Length: 440
Image 1 (tube, rainbow, N blue to C red):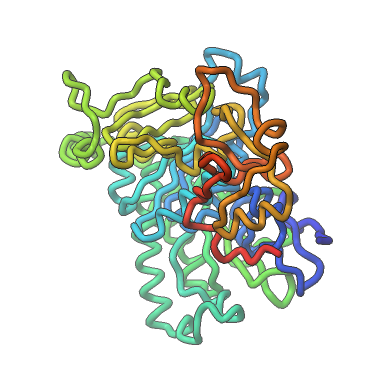
Image 2: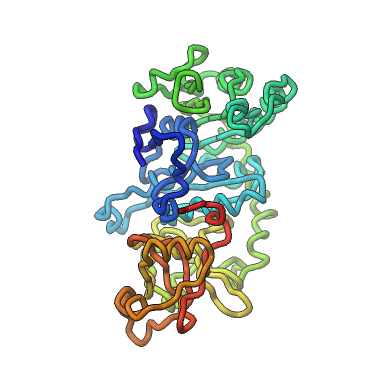
């Protein structure tokens, strides 16, 4: 697969041959890359997420931008991780539409990192939970989708003025909540996949006029070739000029005080009234009536060696985040990456645990499959044992580490769980994500 760099985002690659399907390669199954239009990377270039930052992706599904942000936040020097005073970066990935949460969490799990929490909330609720909390906020706004028409993902109604006006009103509402999430000096990145000025530069003009003197446009020299002539800090990708279906992104830095201190009482009332939704299904601390946050990793130790994680235990699930993320009530009430689920009284490992990198977890058993075995595994088939695969390819275990659960790997990289059934490994691949890969 021959590729070249995306001009505006060096970490992105463009496939040279239009007949090549990147999803057919085993490297896609191992999470080496995420497939998306190159225009989506314009917002990532403008955001420029860095290790140690707190970042919110407010409209995060399906997870292409969110997973790229998470990878950037996780590029921490191993020596820095050893410092007990280190406070690491983290991502809040929020998606208002509940049906899109599974694919978002799947995309984030593919990175192998546990520096994220997720929410399924309206932006107004997120702003009340996390006021003035983030170094950067990305709003990849729902829009009329005019750039998607050429890909047959939208129809010509995307150019209807009523659709444009409806989208612009919704975008304005989201932006008014997004800015409340920013720390002083924080960066707001706004992006769409449409061409209409009403949904793009006009939204940035609205914020500047509504809050005069509080915004500074973000204008990196590296993006000067794509600068919009309409407004400072705005950038456009055009399908007739650039290798993309088209995109818009804008960046503003908060340089003043939004004057939202009067909302503190409202925020406190919201948290008292709405932070019980997660708790109702969870195992409680008898004194605080909250989910148990604990360093007791006994359950995880049965199938592997956890490292540098803080766990949260409820009646039916064990979840975890990187141990250096500071936990308060807002983060505690968010959804953490799920590692184990209690099914009919038995704890079963989840996909995020199989893919977690060695900074967080090392399984007692793992088996590197050959390429044909990987294709069978991705198709949902059981893997037959051979004398070599059942002995020499697995991690050495002592008697206390015997477990039927085994991580299937491809060329040394994890792809999912298998369970030892004697003469075969039963397939426990997650149901979402792999079914239509078409790997050949």
